[in-house]
Length: 70
Image 1 (tube, rainbow, N blue to C red):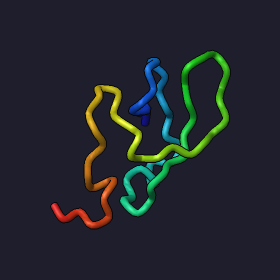
Image 2: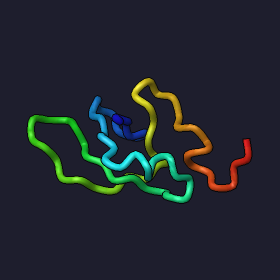
Image 3: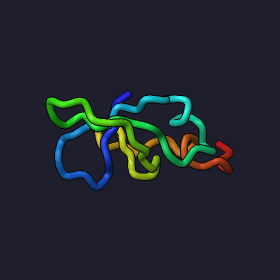
Image 4: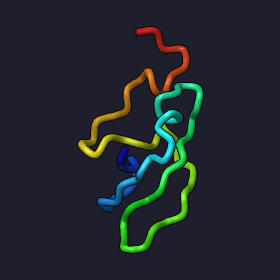
């Protein structure tokens, strides 16, 4: 799954390497790899609160808030 970083002005996307981390509201970070050039970047941790869908829509609250009761 590809997401973008909230405060990143370029069009680079982050490939989420472990989607289970993304769906788990108890994980505050996900491991991902930045895609913004020709070279493969090393994986790094990204705060879920700083990630958005490529359309600009925020992540669902149930993925971020462990106390959410929808």
